[in-house]
Amino acid sequence: MAKLTKKQQTFVEEYLIDLNATQAAIRAGYSVQRASEIGYQLLQKTTVQTAIAKAMAKRSKRTGINQDRIVIELAKIAFVNITDIVNDDCEIKNNATDEDLACIESIKVKQFPTKSGDLGIEREVKLSPKMKALELLGKHLGMWNDKLDVNLNIPVVISGEDELEE
Image (cartoon, rainbow, N blue to C red; front, top):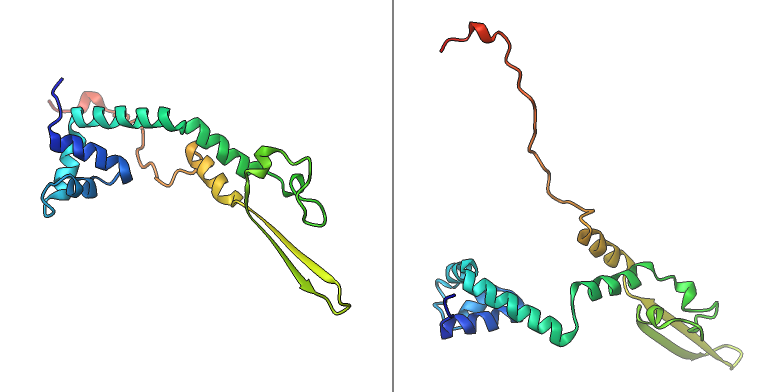
């Protein structure tokens, strides 16, 4: 298999930053005016595709981030119940699981004086957005297909075959 040039290897490394071929081509030193075209052409090369795939697999192994882990985290957010995390006073329950606690986006506690002179407490527990997690999971499962399939398979029957001219 052909080896990557130094510039192509730099393109691969830069591409992994943001998965933007045009910007990766520019950062790798290719012509700014032709960066979009060059980035596209580089992504078509089997050697570059292979190098990108290997580098992404290596990074995934190194970081422990993979598709399964992301889907699991999305599922935690999508299916958490607030009543499993907080009690009626909006305090975190002692028996809340680590999975449930991972779904908390923020906690705010504010004390304020009341008319009676006591201190009132206002608590807010905000969970990560369930709808976004459900949307991403649905997309992963192919449930939300934004493309309309206009291919039709309609059988065509020709009758009067004997009357057709050759």
